[in-house]
Amino acid sequence: MGNTDEGVPDELVQAAREARERAYVPYSGFRVGAAILGRSGRIFTGCNVENASYGATICAERTAFVKAISEGERQFDHVVVCASAPQPVSPCGICRQFMSEFGLDTPVTMVGEAGASITMRVRDLLPNAFQPEDLSL
Image (tube, rainbow, N blue to C red; front, top):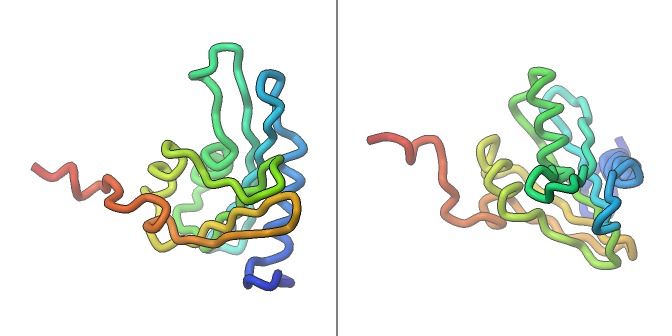
């Protein structure tokens, strides 16, 4: 795989951009695509899917994770998020919590349409994340 200047596989960024174009966003018009590199080497993509009942909307990141998990992937090496904004856009709080379930050290690269990118680990996006061990009584 080729890499961007930040060490993010070019194919992962391209996959997120392509997923963004498939977004279903009749209400906000705000397209988001995500691509996840599984430990197996497979890439899983997702886009945001809006719903007239706004609470039923699902984000691109969770769509990609659910697809990966439903295919048996449980470990992830990188997440890329591309939104229809000039600057990089961070995942929402629900997506941060969802990602934390599968790896606090997973890098997440947010890419803006103008080409700028920011990479942070999940743990830095969601400090003091609620984790499975917190369920212990």
